[in-house]
Each structure stands twice: as C-alpha cells, then as structure tokens.
Length: 111
Length: 261
Image (cartoon, rainbow over all chains, first blue to last red; front, side):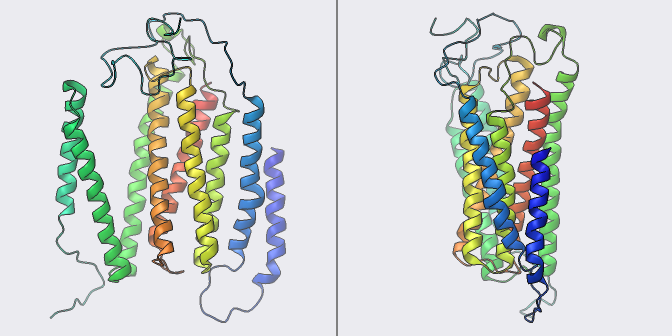
C-alpha cells in the first residue's frame, strides 16, 4: 500500500538524520540507544496522530447524520432471540438498546 | 540470623489471596443471584471486595519493590515470566472466541440463510469507525514506545507526555466503541452473529479498559518518581499488555469486521 511505503521512507529518513548523533562517544555507562526516543516522538506526532486525524475526517465525511431510513422489520426466527429474560429492566431490551435502530422481537418500538 | 543470604523475595504473610478468593466466590454466586433471583447484593459485594483486593495487593507489591527494594534482578525475571504467561493465557482466552466465530461463519447454517453475514444482519462498515479505531490503537502503540524510550533515556517530561497521549487514545477508543455499540442496528440477541460479535469485541473492550487503568497507574507512579531509567518493570508489563490488546483488535478487525462483512 502506498501509505505503508510512505511510512517506510519517512522512518529511514528519520533514522538517517539521527545517525551522526549515535556516532558521538558516550562516557557515562550504559545508555538506551540515544536518539531513539526522538524518533518515536517524531513518529507519534508526524505519522500516528495525523493518521488518526485523517481517519477522523474520513468518518466525518462518510457519516450520514439524522438518517431516517432504516431496514424494514422482518420477524426472522434466528434474530432477536429471547431464551430467557435479560436480568435488567423489563428483560426484553439488550444492554445497549437503541429504539431507533433496534427492533424488539415484535418490531420497532416507535411504529 | 536476621537477614537473608539469597536474592529471592520471601513475601510476608498477606490476607489478600484469601480476600481475593472470597471475592471470586461472592462474584460467582452473586451472578447466579442476579440472573435467577433478581438480587444484586451479593454481586455488588463481590465486585467491591474484588476491587479492594486488587488495590491493596498491588499497592503492597509497589511498597515491597519501590520502597523496600525486594525486587532484585532474579525477582524481576520471575515477574517477567509471570506476565508473559498471563498474557499467553489471555491469548488462549481470545482464541476460544475466534474459534467460535470461525466455526459459525465458515459454514453458515440453513437457518441463517446459508450465508454470512446471516439474513437480516447489516454489518458495520469496516472503513468507517472501525478503521478509525484501528488507527487509534496503532497510534497508541507508537506513543507508548515513545514513552518507554523516553523513560529509558531519563526524559521525565517526555515520558509523562507520551503516557498521557497513550492513555487518551485508549479512552478515545473506548468512547468510539461505546458509540458504535449504541448505534449498531444489530444486538447481542441477534443469533450467532450477535453473540460472536459482542462477546469478542466486548471482552476486548474490557481489556482496553483494564489496560488503560494499568497505564494510568503507571502515569501516577511516574509522577511520584517510582521508576528509574533502568528499573521500571511495572511500566514494561503495562506496555506488553497494551500491545497485546492492540494485536487482539487487529485480529478482530480483520476477522469479524472486515472478512466477516
């Protein structure tokens, strides 16, 4: 995927830039690889978080707010199963029940 | 002889294993009372004693290690083995749910219509919020790696910043998933599709919350200067757990959200 290739070249460019730093002499005992935190910080702010932002934009653009069209209710026997009542409320509503999109076994509640 | 001549940690007698076991009994019997006799007292008592046990037990581990110095190299090695084995057990736990999903989806029965997703099910679009969720968790994997390297390099400000970003992404994921659960046109009672979807993603979500909590504890400990640049196993354990949670999501996304649509 083009995105993955772009990430790869970006990472190697970052590594290339930090190499001169890794070459300097280290006098105070054992260190974690110097400069690697800097690379991960750059990856976080220039790749990871922008990726999240782009995806958020994608969701926003694709979302249809206030969509009233919902599938017609067909009383399939393999859906809306009620072997025993739920231990809450009236025992007939799932935990995340949304009356607009979740019909009960008998149909949508607001019809 | 008032001092030990070995490097191991002989833990002082503690009540928490007993209170933990009792809380497990209270939770299980409490679930039974709730499911069958409409009473939640025992369950609430069980959840309360369970939380208290976890808080006090792990508080004692921090006391024994950070403040009393009992966690020598060999003790830490034992803890590493322990965390790896625990995560392995969790992998197997999820393997069961993936088995159930593939068992039902690879050979859909006639009563479902003979196809997957079953008749009457409109699956979520994998390219919308589920994709965002994937990027959120992947990003959190990058930020937690930044946090770890900052910790190893002794950069306090950056390690705190990176941990905060990681935790925020975890909370963002949880909020997104909650919204997805509330908006989904299908429910847990919608046959085997609903069962496999919500049990697998539900347990995953629970693990995201547990992981976020673990990371928050690490943030608080780092604020209190508990970690050194060389010795911070609590953080590493949290990071391993967090990566595990991320990987489970990737499998969920590919199997249930993408292939399963």
